[in-house]
Length: 363
Image 1 (cartoon, rainbow, N blue to C red):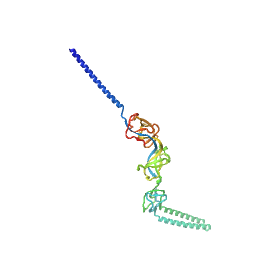
Image 2: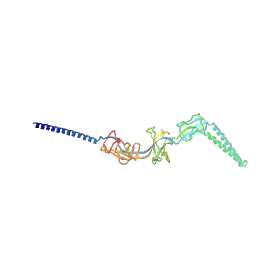
Image 3: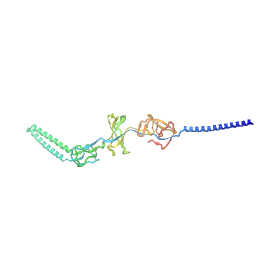
């Protein structure tokens, strides 16, 4: 009896141990499946959101950019050559004048009287010289008398020239053709010799001086087109061309002075601040890549091209022309390719991407 009871207890203990062991194995099997699912999810990361642009062919220009001020090469200060009172102003600021045109009249009574006196003296000495010359032909006067008469005639002529020059100083004339940009005096003012009266500017002599680095000098030549844009007037553009290239390099700055001639147009004024672009090269049919797509890697540049399966591949590019927003490339890409222009950070070859926003077409 005791033996049967002991056997029954041992059998129950064995069955309980077996049940516990089975439950533990079932739990282990469930945990292993979750871990495998988690790992599979980690192996398939979410697509990277990117924005792309479609490449096109078009025209591009290589430019050198500078900032400078517009100035006039022919600009003068008109000054008085005699100390007199102003009796008439004949021009005003903004008037265009021809070379030699009278700008102002000064008091001239004394000068006119002096001219008349000198002219009378010339007439008298001329008659006296002629009389003595006739007597000298008849050997009635000496050669010395004739020479003295000739000397007096010459002196009278010089006195007349001086008087006429002083009279001319009472009419202040324009030394160049141009526009009156400033008037410094008014009627009734008593001016002194060398006093500043007017400013004259020839607007047909406008230039923009730029200083080109020595390394860029081979791309600059006389006759080269230039574009000018005043920041104060957005949207305005003016045309110019390289007129002169200095023959020397400034050793302090390592630059060469280049003079850009600017044909006058309404809206252009000396002293105006300008952005100047020199067109150094033009390509009419180039494959254009937006600079937003470029990813620098050391000394090289790359772009990420979108494939048909929504994966990306890295393409190395070498620009040979560039403007403000685009570059021209040779091999490796083709028109119609789509390249990533936003979201490049962290991309790897073969990475899955998804497009976000509106794809931008290369303009």
